[in-house]
Image (tube, rainbow, N blue to C red; front, side, top):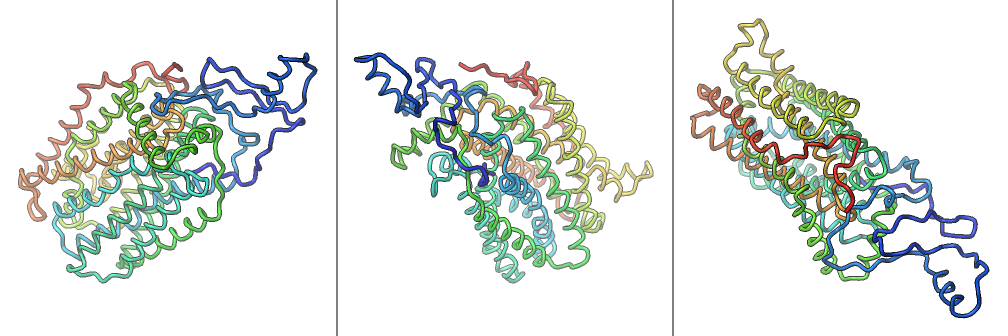
Length: 517
């Protein structure tokens, strides 16, 4: 989301409003006085120098186009007057945008049932289609570079949100209109790709805004706010999605409902004015002087420079590997629960609600107690919990829960979404880490690369899962080899602990882990 405070006007520098002198980005530059009142000064040569400095209101240091981006100190990120009170419009659009991202599970739950029951797709085909549909998410770095380098109407974030919401509105509106037949599968796939393309736009600029604004708040505060809104949308989406499927038995109604929700988000984004943060405003002084291709080229160089930093690339690599090496068997488990165990859609939806409640509780617990825990120790514990949680599917497949007196419905409700919830929570500490390391003016590009890397890792995990299912012989009618696949999942989840040393060991939630260079 964007910093959208339309209620606080820009106040020019006058005699009655003396500006706060900020620490310069380059230590060899000297701050210039911005007062319009001319003090008493000696005549002659010194007077001319003072007169020249009297008209310099903005310090514009010389920047090499390929210069390494510098990490600003917190004192350099001082916003304009009145920004301590965030505008109502900004919080409304930011919170609602993350909430809509979480609520996307509402139409996707209907889409999964539509593909599985309406088109009678196999479990491996469904999982492969889901992974292929996420391909537009891999292009997020391009969207981040465009958002950082090119402004539309003087705004870097808000127009891209409107574009992304419009693309999603088109895709889900078409899904609500086209008939449910097998020969419409190419059109259906095109709508899925278009929807994820629009979602990637909105997610990129939302993460960029959080990264920009987090410099003016406690470390992890805005990230926790985003995760809370995301989890709240997921709770309502899964809860209402299961109810709709149980009562209406019509996925198109759910597609149309989500399209109306996107219409409201589009109207809200068009009615809100973007306010430029101080950090981005100062970086824009160097961007506007060049053409669009030069801006994109320089932004790409800045992104490459930032990624090549060991303090950034090592955590990114660990996070990617920890997701990619675990084969995803979600399609097989979905068919096992709905076809073999004959569970209602409402049970599947409620299990997702329980999972989002776990994310919500874990986020609040992190914000209250875990921010001071060193990152390496925290991620080590989270990864162990994630590996153990995968074994809950083994208990269900082997029907051990029935031996313990626990019904399948209760087990699915309480433990089915546990692994997914832990995997989602694991992103939060890395988002906080990147917010502290991200160079100013590179927020959209870096967080887009992070999201793209996660998406690519998820796709690889999905492809590995399809290959594993075919290798061990799991199909929609034969689940005898599924326990072996779950055990292999558990072992694969422990593999990333072998290079856990690549993560920072001394970082705490309330301190900067990197000193300014």
